[in-house]
Length: 386
Ligand SMILES: [Zn+2]
Image (cartoon, rainbow, N blue to C red; front, side):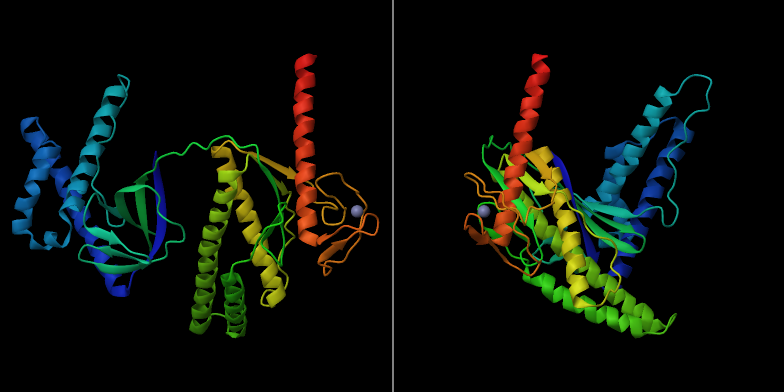
């Protein structure tokens, strides 16, 4: 299966100029190739094919030494793009009904219309936090999630003044073996998650660090005068931190969801009610809450995707009273132990159970979830019987 992995690039101004230069040259080569096909067809009724055009590249390089700044496979890919445009054109001509105007001929690309170039095999190398590109050098990149599989091509794309690297990879689809194991998950502020088996997943340390950086940057932003250049600069800093948080958060929830889906056949979570807007951004507690909320909803959506593609059962239950009711996996007491948010321990006056508050919640979540599963299994059986 082919899968794409896209990362933002952070070129220096000089590198950006060089990248723009590559795009401009690729565009010129593209347009010249289109022109050549068109011209020959008009003169002789025959156009050069892909191989003939590809063979011309080394000759072009002799008269246009600037083309040596581009990797030869990148140039070949430009020729390939021309060929694909013509193949698509011929298909349209064939498919067009009689009597209708014939489909448009492949067009030359205007400035800004040519926004990407591709490496097929060579011309680049990947390290932990950088990408080395032919004649461009080492470009900064944040690999917020690992590239999987075997890289087939790398396309560098410019979109609204930002640069991206897109790796197209051949990924082997893993088929997970069926699992009878189930797990309940409680998400919280002090821990990112507590599982019904009693284990916990800590909030990553960078959350706290980034919260502080964000609070500082937002306070600075609020002090700047409207329309001033320092305000624009401060806003840039804030949005950079947001982007960094988003990337690292994605990486974090991705790994957690992968671990769960690999092992468990049934995964039970709470319906999330992420509360409204942040009223007073800049205060640390509000920020911590908003970062956690965003992480949880991202976790839910990543988990949903992964569970679907791995055919795992994902059940969500209502969060009412899950942290209050007393429940143990083997036989439940069910007594409602009211507690404040600050009380971290569940201590039941009825049956004497003492348990970490979040662990008790995770146990409630899994038992509610499994109840729902058996109800729906029963309901399905009744429907078949009727
Ligand atoms: Zn109890």
